[in-house]
Image (cartoon, rainbow, N blue to C red; front, side):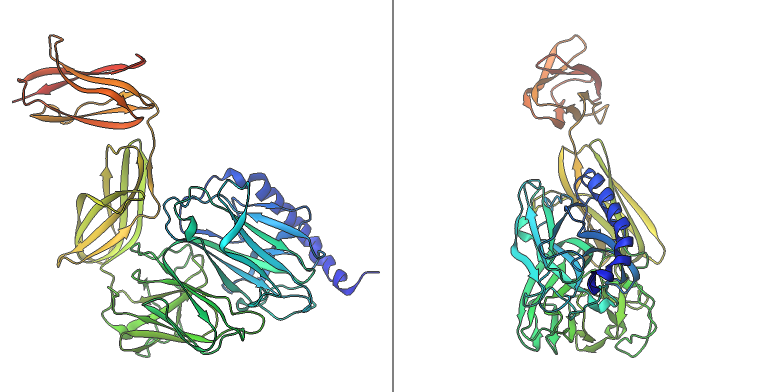
Length: 560
């Protein structure tokens, strides 16, 4: 005889069987063909999963439509662990793509979870593990993420229900945070998200994000009060949700000159939230000076906290009029910023009556509080040993121009490469370009130092790194400058390490200089020839490999 829980599953499972099949084909068939993740922030919603795989013998994990997603979107595709259908002990594991954290110092993971049990007796659970050996073995995260219905705070975000659970409000979702700073600098990190059914009720996941944080701090919330582990932002907890409290985490994001957004609409239209002066407007800029992701584990089935957030505006560069700013909030990088009613007290701006935790920043109208330079894009393209940097400004204020700076990955030292003049004060879009040529093989970071006419400056960092690989074949370049006096530069490419010689000859074939005669590593090389000791005329330089596989000669001219 079929029980009531089984009967309610018939229609759900008919739909779910097709979605599960698609999940298995999409992720198991192609998941590991997407290569490593090297661009951050990384964002993965349930709408377009790529690079993930699933290990399960019973289809516990599947795609399904959440009635309401974390951002409030109806019929939002998410990933669900169908604990409602499968007996206790049934398990399935989601495997992430390989993340290259070589350039990251404080990687941090955020995702949203929504869950309720069937009764208080079942113990559905969720575990996050990490691998640094290509997925051969997985271990606990530095602070183990092992949550269950019985945990305190609980995995469950809503009280028990004997109906098949599907989130019906954005308030059902809680943001989770995992600090992976221990794995900063690692070339390959894979995450495993393991669900284990307690034959309770469904567990939903969505909006998985990986950032490289500027700083991470934690406060143990045990009672109402103000918590301020970060010097700029503080949280005043009126209530704690779970009676025992929970962990409050503040992630301050790195300053990169702009706040990244993967949402089609960066800032939602505002028709109700009031600015400190009582006005209502839709902000059009988000300050990149300071922005945060705040999470709190104490929002569970016992209740959700009520709190206010305050941000100290003392060190914000774009501030002219504090009465015309909003604290803005968004679910994740894939959602628009939403203005919340904001008040001021001195240099503090405050938003009150909040219950959910997510991303926070400060926004305004650029006509009142303009950014010195608003950068809409900053990209790099590599051709051989050259990198072309391109950036676009949507507005400029008193902009003298940009220093272009480069650093080797992992180094704290920056080298100035050149300067590109700005456009003073402009409200229209302007495009810029700078070519960094003849770069040695390696991995590099780039940044712009925007300088105004008063000498004030702001840094804008290129998201990601630029890799100059090894040449595919031997090559001897034409010297530059040519003609020259007294110095010229000669480039040559080596696809493999080996003994080489580079010599200079006169018109009669007499050797007059040996520039290189040693083992050189694979890569792009440059040597300088100084002709101070020779007369004007035509000369030849010859590159020869020790194994005789390559030899090339080029002509140059000395003019004195």
